[in-house]
Image 1 (cartoon, rainbow, N blue to C red):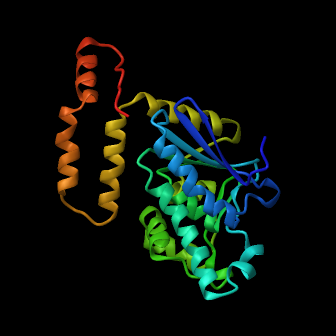
Image 2: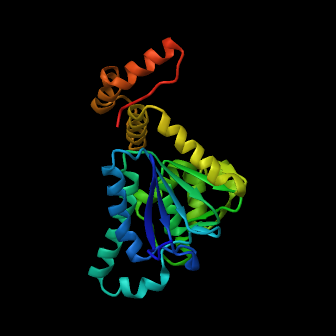
Image 3: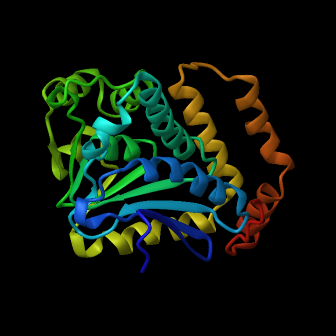
Length: 261
């Protein structure tokens, strides 16, 4: 165990980023926000790692949101506030911009900044104790366009307005129906199912997985037709060893052994 408020564990091809303040329901303090980009960079730079899982320590929370006990200090001056919020934005973008697939494994409360952090992941696997909320109306806050867009892209404009304006929490079933949770499992099965899918991603073509992530991101940014980047990704696949291996394995009726990193 470690007393660091956030840390990274790597086992084989899977890295796990742990929000580690269980006594505070993993509330995100300034140290966590400033550390997340460093840990994401570590994952990006480790060619052995193919997947990143994010979760909170303990069964009660993914993260209960930003640590409000710090707000008086981090908003003491306009300059201090700008610096603090820049660190939060950098943490979100570090996870969202990671080219490798990311999965938020959600137990218990996933509120405010914690929910916004989960939204930066490619998928959110949750158990039936999960509750999702982004309640700025309880604090007189306004979320940035990019954070709001991530929510609206998943649940639609109307549901996003309901959640943000009404500080409405979604239970696990409603989050699944709304598209906020990707999959839902019993509590006893969540870790096994999340790791199982991560391991499956590790076995598949990393070229394809990363191309999918880039292409879906381009679509989310408003593209409705192929761009030069997506054409390059699509046609470039035929020159990669993963395509040749996948084709040969199919014809030879064996499991492929992909090598793209």
